[in-house]
Every structure is written in C-alpha cells, then in structure tokens.
Amino acid sequence: MSNPTNAAPPILLSIAGFDPSCGAGTAADLKTFAAHGCYGVAAITALTVQNTQSVEDVHNTPAATLRAQLEVLARDVEIAAVKIGMLGNRGNAVVVGEFLDAHKFAHVVLDPLMKSSTGTELLDAGGVKYIATELMKRASVVTPNVAEAEILTGLAIKELADMEAAARKLVEMGARAVIIKGGHMERPVDVLFDGNEVVTLGSDRVKIENTHGTGCTFASALAAQLAAGRPFSEAAMLAKAYVTKAIEKSYPVGKGRLPLDHFYRLKIEPPARGLHEVPQHGMHPAAEPAAH
Amino acid sequence: MSNPTNAAPPILLSIAGFDPSCGAGTAADLKTFAAHGCYGVAAITALTVQNTQSVEDVHNTPAATLRAQLEVLARDVEIAAVKIGMLGNRGNAVVVGEFLDAHKFAHVVLDPLMKSSTGTELLDAGGVKYIATELMKRASVVTPNVAEAEILTGLAIKELADMEAAARKLVEMGARAVIIKGGHMERPVDVLFDGNEVVTLGSDRVKIENTHGTGCTFASALAAQLAAGRPFSEAAMLAKAYVTKAIEKSYPVGKGRLPLDHFYRLKIEPPARGLHEVPQHGMHPAAEPAAH
Image (cartoon, rainbow over all chains, first blue to last red; front, side):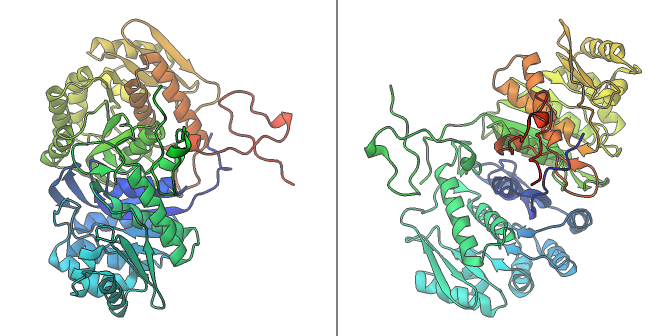
C-alpha cells in the first residue's frame, strides 16, 4: 500500500518550545520546514501556556524526557539540519549540547531565544551562560536578535556599527557564523558575519511589528536552505525573503500578535486589476481585487 | 507591516499527544489542517517518546496544564471545529469533557485513540470508560477503528454486519454520529451511521499497512470538512479520499511505519508516459515516469 517511489525529503529537527497558538515554537518550525519541502521532526523543550496575546505560563520538559525525545529520533532518522530555539533552562541546554556532541550534524542553527515577543522570560540565567560559553561554538550559525546579542556579548547596540561589533565579538566567543537580526531597529537590517566578511541585509520596509514567531521562522527557513546546500549568505537572504513575505501575509488570527502565513507560497494570489495596483517591488503585499 | 487584507482562515483545535517523529498526533493534525487551508491551534495531552518504529514512553500532561492550554486558546481565538485524539488518562479526558461543556463548539470530532499503530497503550481504563459514558455524547462524531469500537461496545467485530451493529450500539450509547474505520479489515471499508442511515464507504485497495498517523489524519481532515460546512457523509468521503492519497504518498522516512505525505496536494506529479501507465481510477498511485 505504501509508495516507496515517493522520494525521501530532507529531514529537519526542531528543538523548541510548544506554543498552543502555533504562531511560534515547534509548530512554526514544522510549518516552515514543510513549506520548504522538508520533513520535520521535533523534540519539545517546554509546554507553554500561550496565545497571541501573551505567554501565561511555561512548563519546561524534564531533562531526561527531552534527552529521550532526541535520542529516539536520532536512532530512527537521518537528520539533515537541526534548528534550536527555546531551551527553557540550563538543564535542557546541556542536554542539547551533549546531543550535538554525540551526533555530528552538518548544519545546526542556534536561535538563542531568551524572551517571547511579548516579553516573557523563556531561558534562565544558567541557560544564557551555557549558550554563550558552550552551545554557540557547537552551532553552524547563531541567530540572536539585537537584545539577545547585547546579553550574549555585554555590548550595547544602538546602531549598525554596534551590530557589526557584536557580530565580531560573537565569533571571537566561538560562534562559527552569526546573523544579528535587526528587525526591530529603526533601520531594520540584519548583519551577517562568518569570520571573514560582514554582510548587511536590508530592506526599506520590513520593520517587524505586531507578529510573533518571526525569529523561529527565520531560523527554520535558514536551516532548510543550509540543508539544501546553499552557501551561508545566500541561505540567509532566502530565509529573510521567506520570513518577510510570511509576515506580510500574517493572518488575522487571535486578539494579539498575529501569526505568519507560513504557506503563502502555496496559495494563488488574486491578480492585480490595474496598473496603479501592481506591486512596485517583490516585497509589496498583493493588491486586492477591485470590488464589483 | 502586517497585512489585514489576508482573510482569516477557519481555526481548528487539535487536542492530542505529541509524536516527535511527527507522523501522528499533534503534528499530523496541524499538517492536515494546513493542507485544508485552515489555521491549526493545539493543546498537548502527552509528550510521547516515539519514532516510526515504536512508542518507547509516554508522559501525560498534568491535567491543570492541559486545562490552561485549552482555556488560553478559547480566550483568544474563535474555534470552528475541535479534533480530539490521544487523551492519555481519565484526568485529561475529564478536562476535555469540561472544556466541551464550557464552550459550545459547532463540530467536535472524537477519535477515541487507545493504542498506537505499534500497540502501545495510549489511554488508561478510566479514560476508556469516560469516553464511553461521557465524552462520546459531547462529540459531533466519533471515529473508532474496529478494535476501539469493540472495546467501547463490548461487541466482537468480524465482518461488515458486525461493524454496522457496533455503529448502531454506539449511537444508542449516546454518540450523535459514528464512523467505524475498517482500514485493517480483510475488506477495508468504513461504516458511517448518523442515527438515520448506515452508509458503507469502500474502496478495493486501501488496506492500511505499514504507516502511522492515519487515524489522526482522517479525523483531522473530517474536522476540516465539517468546519467548511459539508454534510456528514460528504465530509467523511472527502476525508477518506484525502487520507487514502496521503497514504499512497507516504514517505520513506524512518526505519518503521511510514509517515504520510500530508501535503501531497501541493506537489506536481510527474506525467504518465504511456496509456498502460495511466491510473485506472482516482485512488491509483501516480504512474512513474518511464526510465530513459
């Protein structure tokens, strides 16, 4: 009955917390993997009590249960890339560090998540320290936002030059490659540094507001692009283009910060009805059909 | 930045256990919802330690945490349909029963999951009893497989007539509508009964083998079709057609029972190369391109 002629897709592992509203965390990762034609598997680091408005409570998974989830997957499937998000506490961060040591994965994207979009702490101080001193050096690429980069480096980041300095410091601290996400900055740019060259990825209108799950989505898309064999800066550009469009297509779901549409690519957009409605560039939201 | 012109999709709630291999449970539900153009949200009843080969361990979510996940969602989003899968134990089944009483949902699909495809118990005896006496009557439709229907009714099911008798008994016990899934029977048919008319849904070659997550997928597709306003038997036929094709497209992922391809609809199939390779009916797997 089963069809062995269906080709095996790349298998990507999400290590993250579960958000019941499914805008962030495990569900955002799995949707992003699927949208990139990959098969997602996942180990859950925490069950959050969360909707689009706030994170009301966090139940970190016991370390032994997290380890068991990771090992049961590693025994069964060939993992092409790993995306690490919310870890919750030092105990779970250590489990992940040991897992990375035991299995040599080709691509490990570490999103050093410390707070939710709505401000709730999602990692204890011991976990932050373990990321800075141990986990970063085990990743292929680390993707902090500005606030996380400030905490990891101890540097204040006010402008682009500060982002570059922080990126260089993260590489000095052991990161192989860094992307500092400046989506909330006045001029929303991302800074890439792989130890050789600083690259700035910008766009004129991609300031991130009123959404959640953008960091998870970017890191997961990056993992998918790296697993597909793209070089670092190209993978980052494609991941940024994906998350930008998914933000533009965010859904009116819930009363708070909107979830993205991870599957926007799979939908047919209505045609523009007049020249004045034609998108001016690739990142313009689709024109609405004219009313009749 | 966010795009309020993107229409709100129907929001469907999965209440289920999490399978790290993502072939069954929460992830299968969310993928099915997405494949039907719906937005999925989810409350996790248990973290399982599971791959495609077996369920090695089960950690049921504490009842208070399950309740908190459900309530945080109900306060935030309008739920068009609920799909209930693995409950784990009586405590969590009672939480779900109380949740259904507190919120009147238009469509509730109850998949009374008792064992994994590989034979592990996923519900305690108290939970089975609560489903039989309390939860079934709070659902729009109950979707047991043959083994579950035997346990719920106390009847032995050997052939089609037994399936019909069990369906009638489940309605006597309080179910509003029943689908008994006979995918593992010698003649693989499903029996539908809504209190009025028994309908048999068959196909000549859809015997389910060597996959996992088919029950979760069927129930989730059914919830999506009911939320879209389809009448019961039409919704069941469409859900069966979806799961059948997703089984045919199951992936060679893992060393055990294959996960389905929930997104097969979104992929372009290779064209058939000769008349003898043209599918003979709608449920035939796609012909392979001829080798050159």
